[in-house]
Structures are given as structure tokens and as C-alpha cells.
Length: 343
Ligand code: G3P
Ligand code: MG
Image (cartoon, rainbow, N blue to C red; front, top):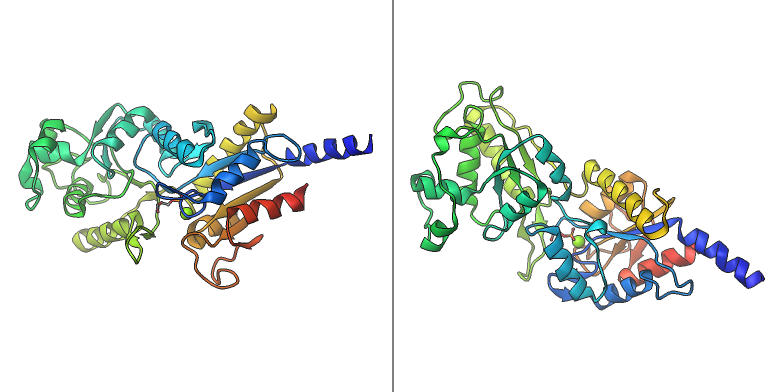
């Protein structure tokens, strides 16, 4: 009886905790599995002493393909089921913007995948930079536009279209073209190409970025520039050309809006798993990047765990943004320590 009582107690405690995982540098490196990542998901999906599922969601600054496609790829690498209902990538919360804007310029990513993402989010009229280059190649003087790109783009007379907002969803594959087109639109009258507004502020269309990471680790020996660097370049150019600061909105970790969105996802995932729509008291964020995962988690009141399998290469803890629950060799050590504490 006593043992059963203990188990019931533990189940109750287990229902009062949840994990939030960063993906790159914690569970995988690109397409390569970090073996402890699979072990962790096995445990949280029920292979534990209680035999119950422990709620966990994924919160990544990654981007560039529809949620369904990314989740499918991750499930196969991690050999565990992952639902889109427990998955947030940098641009996921931007789906809410489809209610406010219908004609948008979507920037970044491979091929036309971000057009597909925007379609799924419910944006009605989606334009990508290639559509504009196909209409008027002189807009990007040094761009070499291939026949294949021309065949897959959707040109029309953009002097007759008001683009209502700019959405940078993923890393630009061509800074020169994308920056030129974005700058033309920011300086236009209400997003109409071919015009230049007299007042740079009152007629300026809004610009949104899906995340703010300056650098991103890749197979190259030193990290490569990411969306944050692209944005800073645009801000500096805009200021130099117009004399005014560019207002912009940034999503992703460590921005507050993204953590609030994560809370909603945790609550509804709790509902799917345990039939209780609420946020557990003990939320643990496991990340490898002190400047995004850890600083954001600390500000939001989560327990933060920093792992050594990704961006962080430092000593005992990060000096600027120390993880409040500790630094761990890998994700398995982190969740074992958290579960020992809570259960
Ligand atoms: O920097 C973009 C992306 O690769 C980071 O992914 O999962 O570490 O937030 P993640
Ligand atoms: Mg990471």
C-alpha cells in the first residue's frame, strides 16, 4: 500500500513538471542525432519508473520549412513520435499575423519553401523576392537569375500591388537582392514598388523577423552570420539612407512573445496528455545557447539547464547569462537531474 501511495504521489509530481527543449545543439546537430537526445525522448515518452508520459515541447529558432515537414524529419532522427502540437519554430507564432495582413513579402529560406509555410499560416497573397526579380530583373542589378527560378516564380506588375508587410521567415540566401528589395519597400509609399515616400515614417510598411540570432553554428569552423546580422545590416542601411531609425518586430528566443506562446502550447499539450489544460509549476528549459535559450528562460521564470553539446563551450557556467539550474554534459544528465529533484 505504501509503495502504491508513493507511486501515486510521484505521478502527481510528474504531472506538475514539463520540459522545453531547444533542438540544435541539444538533441541534434543538423541532421545528426545526439544519442542522448533519443534516450531522453524514450524516457519522457513513458520508458520511466512511473510508466507515464512527461510533457515536453520543442522550442527552436530554426526555420525554413512547414512544421509538419520539420517534425517528420525530427521524429525520424530522434526515433520518437513528435506532434506539431508540441513544436514551435521561430516563425510558428507569426501565423497570428495572417489575420492582419493579406499581401506580404516573405523573405528567406531554400527555394520556395517559405512561400509554402506562409500559405499554411493563412496568408492570402504571398510574394517572394524571386517574383519581383522575374518581373523586373533590373531591380537587383548583379543578380544572376536562372531559367529554373524564372519558371517557378510568379511575376506580375508590382507597381499595382500594395505589399502590406515584410516577413523575414528564414536566413536570406542572397543578401544583395533581398536587402535591395526590402529597402525599396521600406522606402516606398505604402509598399508599392516604383514609389519613394516623401515621409519615410508615416507611409512605411512594417517589417517582422522570425528570430534574432547573430550567429549560427554550422560545419564551418567558426559560426556563420544568421538573421540577426542580416537585420542589423538592414537597420544600418535604412538609417544611413533615411536618417531615421527602423522600427521592427523580432520573434524567436529570447523574445518574450515567443515564451508566452510556448506557455500556451505547454498548457494545451498538458491537456492532450493529462486532460488538464494548465501550465505545470516546474518548467525546465534545456538549451545550448546562453544568449537565447538561457537568457529567455531565466527572464520567464523557468528553470534553465545549459548543455555542453552545442554553442556553449565555456567554464563552470556562462558568465553573462548563467543557467539557474546548472550546466550539464548533455541533455540526458540535465533531465535526470531535474527528475531526481522533482520526483
Ligand atoms: O540559429 C538558428 C537555429 O539553428 C537555432 O536552432 O534549435 O538551437 O534554437 P535552435
Ligand atoms: Mg540550440
